[in-house]
Image 1: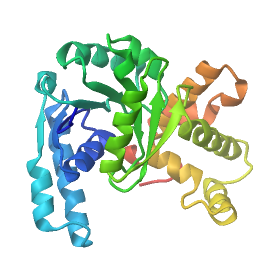
Image 2: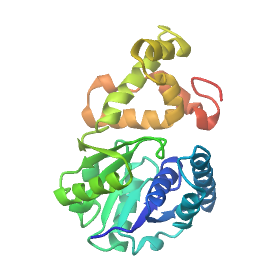
Image 3: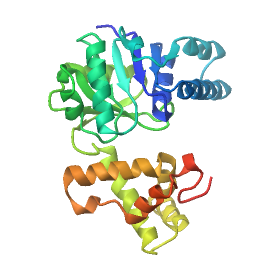
Image 4: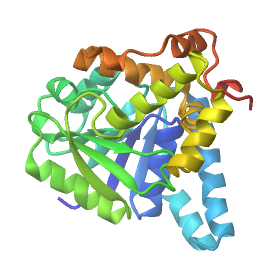
Length: 282
């Protein structure tokens, strides 16, 4: 099936980035969010992002205008009734995602692939909420979506080879690199990344080093472009905690226990960049 119309559910940081890259690649995109304000912010963010690309000479003014013309927004999920591929990018909460997948299953044609941008939640579980588990997969984009080339494709227990191929071909059209991961908690990216961030937080809590010291060691000693605590602030400490909880509960190994300092900071509303305070002030 030729895919031309893409549905994106969720207009937050990841959702608006996903909508942008599909619109840039020539797809008609319908971005849906329950909050009208989120849609307004998403369109403004996309316009600003495309404007930067024009300023850097990576996109022409005409291409920017055409991409924006291919993007429509709305608060009603029914607008996705005739799309040909869906990417869900709502909050990282398993029950909320399963509810959305059940609704999308009833709303869209049976042959439409339903994908999730989840960074850690079981794809098999999401597929089980539908009558088409063979057409459900994970499509985990990296943040910021317009700049990062990797997309982690997660095969659930019932995901078909054809569904994986469809997603891989979309990644090629988006000029992204697809890497397949099995349906284990955290997949590949967060199975490796989050324990490193968690251990960096333990190092701060135990007085091994300040946040600045830990980040400097990882940047200058390990050649990381960004220190783990700066990265945690960028991701959101609440998101880091949610993923660590998924790893701990899903794998049952105490090495994935979230650091108590991480729990305290989230409880205090110190979530990183988005709250103005995390391991650093913004």
